Length: 266
Image 1 (cartoon, rainbow, N blue to C red):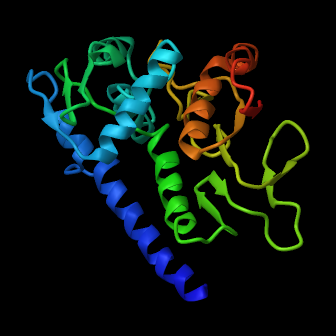
Image 2 (image 1 turned 90 degrees about the horizontal axis):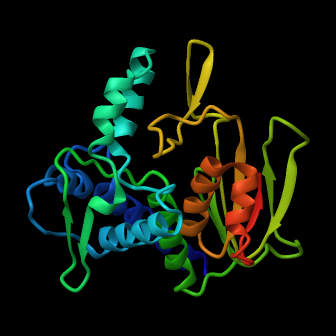
C-alpha cells in the first residue's frame, strides 16, 4: 500500500500541474487565458473536458445564485490586483468600464461539441472560487480509485477527507476565527472550504478589502467575515463558501435552507 500511495502522490501532483496550466488566470498561455482572449470574436472555441466541466458547473451556480457566483468577474479581479500593487483604489469609472465585460449570461456553451463562446469583447474568466475545489476533488479521486481510503487532501484551506485515521473519530480540523475561540471539526468522508479576509485582503485608506469580489458592485468585500462550508465535494464547498461570503449570514443561511446536506459556520 505504501508503494501505491507514493506512486499515486506523484500522479496527484502531476494532475495539479496539468489543471493549473488549464485554469490559471495568472499564466499568460493557460487554456483559460487563451479562451478569454477569444472573447467577442463570435467564435465557439474547442476546450478541454476539464475546463468545460468547471465552466458548466460555474454557470449552473451562477443561475442558481442569481449571479452572486460569477466566473466572469476577471475584469474586476485584474483591477483589484493592480490596486493592491499600487496601493490605490480603482476609480468608479474603471469599475464601470470593467462591468461592461462582466456577466455570466455572456458565456455560451455548446456541450455536445465541447465548445464555448464568450460573447462580449474584453471578457476575462476567473475560476478562483471553483478551480481549487475541483483540483482537490481530482487529487482525492486518484487515491480513492486506487483503493486508498485513509486520506486527507489539503489545497490551501480546501480540504477533502476520507476515512478517519486509525483509532480517531475523524481528521481534526481547527477553524481559525478572529471573533471567538477556535472551533474544532472532526471530519470523515466530507469536504470543507473556508473563505474570508483573515489573510487575503488589501488595505487602502484604512479600509480592508477582501479578495472576494461582489459581482453586483465590482468591489472587494469590506465586511469582515469568515465562512466555512461542509459539503459532499470540495468544488461545491468552494463555490458555496464564496457565495455565502457575499450574501452574509442572514441571506446565506436562507439560501442554504434548501440544501440539508450542506453545513455552514459563518
